[in-house]
Amino acid sequence: MRIEAQIRQAIRDAVNRNSRKPFYWGGLAGYQQLEAIGQALHQATAIDPESDYLRQLIGRVDRVLAKNHTLAEDLQAAHQWLQQIADCLRYPPHSRSSESQTALKSQQVAWEMEELIRQFHPTGRHQQAQIRLYNALQKRWGLYAQELLFCYDIPGLPQDKLQMEALFGRLRRHQRRISGRKSTRELRDFGQAQVLFLADSETDLLRQIRQVPPAVYRKYRQYLAEAEAPRQFMRSLHHDPLGTTQTLISQHAARCRALAQNATYADYSMKNDLHSC
Image (cartoon, rainbow, N blue to C red; front, side, top):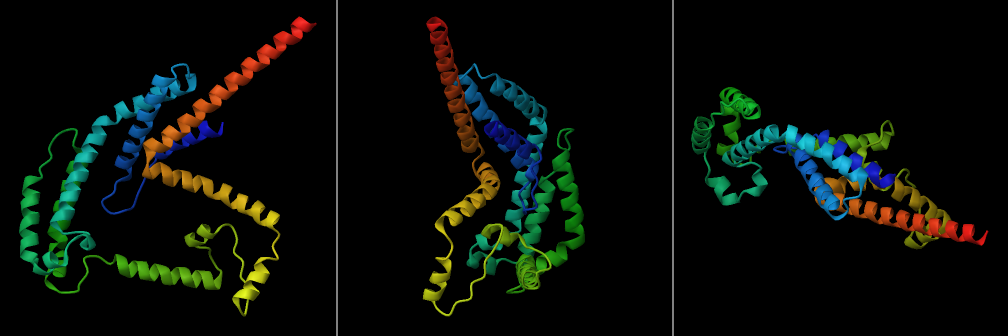
């Protein structure tokens, strides 16, 4: 049941997808991920129409996609407008050339933003996401336009404070690590435990490491791989939902074929035993 559980986990992750990244919306990414899962399921049911489990699953996925299709289109359009706002502000700055950033002035950015706001007028009943984006843009631009435009006239003034917050975050994590009061997310990349070696030379360090028996090392290395497997699966699913789902379905089909062959062999063996009796 592990393969079926991973397929259900992929669908739940698509439905409950969230994100705090700038200009990256979790609901839209989740819908696109569910679309890829549905595409892979349709391909699988076309090849193997006898799979009852996949046919029942594709019916539910199709209902969710059809129900949220209009909302996803609205969200996609709002996201495209959000990208235009980012292009107008020349954000993020690392994706722009230094020459254009140097020649850019606040008056040009202000004029382009005012023109973009004049062009952006969602009024439809199915454009709720675009209407909310428009209202938020108009309100914040009216309140904070002057503060946002300083970075285009003052050389060296960043457009955001993300680098400063990242620096404070690293300092805070180092302090937690030294004091031992709270674990940090980076510690998970190194496994469930860490070992501190005190050695005067590389030879001494190698001698201490060799004291661990290979069988014990392989055992705990397997524990670490099993603990990292769910995180690796979710990362693969977010980067390539179609390929990951197709891999799961291929494993499901291979297991079904193996079970069918075993059942056929068991029936054949039972018939031979009955005849011999």
